Structures are given as C-alpha cells and as structure tokens.
Image 1 (spheres, rainbow, N blue to C red):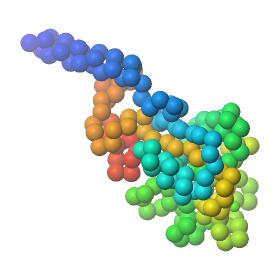
Image 2 (image 1 turned 60 degrees about the vertical axis):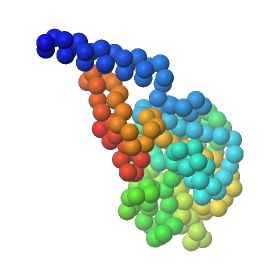
Image 3 (image 1 turned 90 degrees about the horizontal axis):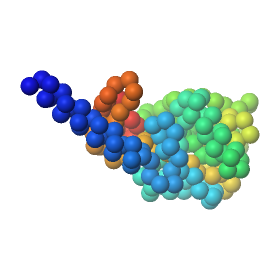
Image 4 (image 1 turned 135 degrees about the vertical axis):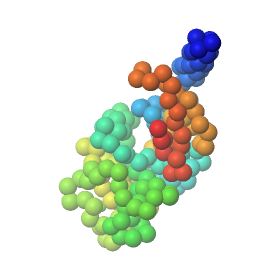
Length: 185
Ligand SMILES: [Ca+2]
Ligand SMILES: [Ca+2]
C-alpha cells in the first residue's frame, strides 16, 4: 500500500518536472534569470510611463535585491548598449524615504549608490536609476526622457495560484506569490 502511494507521488513529481521543463518559466521574449523574468525594449520612458508599461505586461519596474542580480542587469544593459534604466523605487512621497513596492512602507532591499548619490539634485531627483557604466545607482528626475525600462516578474506568473516547482535539493517545493508580488517559499 505504502509502495503504491510512493509510486503515485513519484509519478506526479515526474509529470510536474516534465511540464516545467518543457514549458519554461518565462513568457517568450523575457530573459530568465534565477526565479525571475526580465523584459527590455528599445523605447525610453519617464519613470511613471515605465511603471505603467510594466504593469500592462503583468510585471513591475525592476527592483534589484541582490548584488548578483545587479551584476546580471549590469551585463544585460551593457550588452544592449543602454546607458540608463529605471529601478522601481522612488522617494517622491517623502524626501529621502525610498519605497520600492506598492504595498511596502519603505526601504531599499539593496543599496548600490554611485559616488555622491543620492543628491536630490535641484530638489527634484526622486526616482531610482542604474547606470550601465559601473552598475551603480543614482536618484534622477522622474520625467527625464533618456532612461530605458526593465520590467520584472517572478518566473511563475500566475498570481495567487499555488504552483509546484522542483529543485535538486527537494523533489517538490511549493511557492506562492505574496501580496507584494514576490515569490515566497
Ligand atoms: Ca529625492
Ligand atoms: Ca542624483
């Protein structure tokens, strides 16, 4: 009996591995990296227009959370000859208090400021951008027109659903998406 149950579980696990392996985890034309998918295009936008564009694709403006992710994005921008890209964080509500997620109070998950940044230049630098030269960040005027957009979404795209995925460490793990749109294990 126990053996039958075991084989049934194994059968399901193999099926899930097959489906995940065949389908991939990112929509076509999105770059997959780790548990995330990233989308770029060749149009520069204001920060607000970039955020709206990503929202329309079911994602959000890129938020960089680790130095490893920063290096990946740095390389991506260099490869595509893009000088600047928006990050989905701003201090437009309260000067100096950076907010990155719709539902979060405040805070940057990572700080990677360029020298002398943030400087709130002219009192109007309220949106975060990454520069491809060194991968460092600056606060910038949200309405400048020369910054590219990078959209990000979790690699499991159906928000609210519980989706099974696999790893070599554990045969089956359960991931859910939190209210902030981030993957929770
Ligand atoms: Ca500012
Ligand atoms: Ca600045």
